[in-house]
Length: 287
Image (cartoon, rainbow, N blue to C red):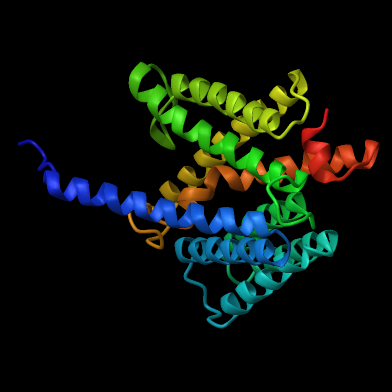
């Protein structure tokens, strides 16, 4: 017997719901990115808290009922603090994660919570650090750096979906994500590089082979992040990380690639800033 197919009207309403949700999310993100400063830090903190909440819902429950709420409050403050004290923010997050890791002696599940703190905090801090304290403008190199990472990851995801459907071929990681193919991964990476170079070119920065390699690296690690989140969902037997975003699932489902890509981008910028100066955003983009 064939499985029942969704009615045309229902499919259409789901598409509209997904589209409206995406428009709202993009509008909020663009406004906060343009404003920068504390507004962008607050948005990053909110995203981190929601990611940790979904992580706890998947990996819990935990015996200590009040502690998770205190942990989310701490995470929000830590991410916002990254606007002025990024190293302290990372240090506090790592200390809390280590403390939770030691607590697994009495409750083994807490080890997952420890990993969740790092998973939620580091990319949010990375986003705040990349945006920096530049002016309210998309011309700020910090804003360009964040846009660069977002565009590379989103172009990769979109192109990978269509390339995989059109070309097909061997599966990329069937154990974790049965629908992903090598053709999709390669097509997505190519699109991510092209999209990233377009952002840098429009911003008036130099476009060269090293910039293309950076975009390729971010595209690759973004796809790894996507697979890692799929593996976690399979481990805990859930289809979506949550139901926060109508038509899309949870926030982890939408930001899985960005989590790793933002962290990698900030690491690249930080290392280059140590050696050549100019700031973390410039360290990522100016070669």
